[in-house]
Length: 186
Image (cartoon, one colour):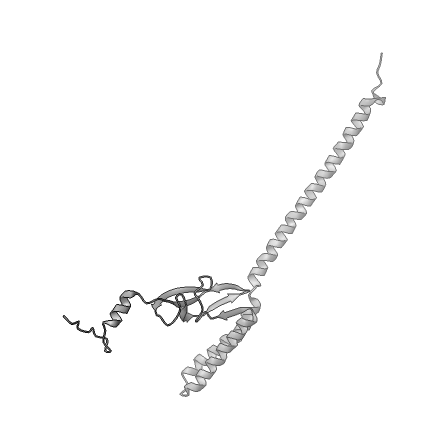
């Protein structure tokens, strides 16, 4: 008895297997192409980001060049001028020009003077005892703070009030108008 394998379930299974093998090969090729496309896309984006980082400040720097040139002119003018008012005016113009450029690019100055101390916007460099201001009030600003896009990039450097200690008050009471200690009655 001879079995004809060309016409039976085995033949159908072999055709189905061959078809699956071909589909697998096609999907694998498509996967490898997509993977290569993604890798090329990632490399292209990395290159674009690197170029962006390199040239992100190009506009800002271009606008700062005239300010730099004005400072150069003012400094060159120092040696030849006897009129310091014109020198002061030139430096003031360059300073205002610099402020305008920085403002145009979003850098904002802020002041904390007479406000309650907030460590998010200020750095306390010293404290001063006083009863003239509420505790934790900024009484002096050594450097202004700066923010960019509503984010503090440099906190203000400040002096903060604290209440006069009992020791300091008793020393003041025992001192005369000239600052010398009064002799106590014995």
